Image (cartoon, rainbow, N blue to C red; front, side, top):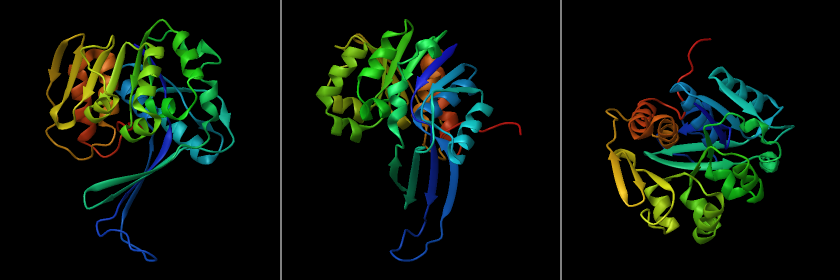
Length: 274
């Protein structure tokens, strides 16, 4: 199965500062660099779980962009799109006292304009996955073009409650209608913010419920799958792994993939081989 994804590819900087940060001073911390971005996370979990993935996202010719992209290619992800000179996205995750704060730089968003320009990158797709991050940052036209260029199933991830709030829930609900997805992925807080009843919408709604697992709402019926996680090390990327598993083989693989993700450090599956 081939899943084509539109979404971020980024450098994740994870900083754990047990004693907190101190103004004008140093603080002992654990710092880890890794590839990230929701589109990239979903794509790598797709290949890890046995599917094929093609990602259209931000690409740059600078050292950071080249390094992160090479990591994805090593995991079997085909990365497409025009390369820009600079402006690769980055996310800094600061963990202090068990609480996480994020600082995000989306980079140069010019890549979004190219998403629907040449639909050949969608050839053979079984699913088109649209991450909410670029949807909430860019103009709607490129995404409407790419959506109407495919006949496969389309999934939209709401991605961020805070960005959805800033965009406007009613406005985004109208955008969703225009995209006419088969499936919408959302956390319970994101879906609540959208203000729609899952029983009344024409799409399948998959709610990511964290420690409670996930549920599928389909035209008045509900199917629930409990969390399969026995150990929780790091929840980053769990919802992305869940989305990948669902598109490949439904709720059972979705919750299994999320459990595998939270049992390790990092948002993407481990890299095997050299």
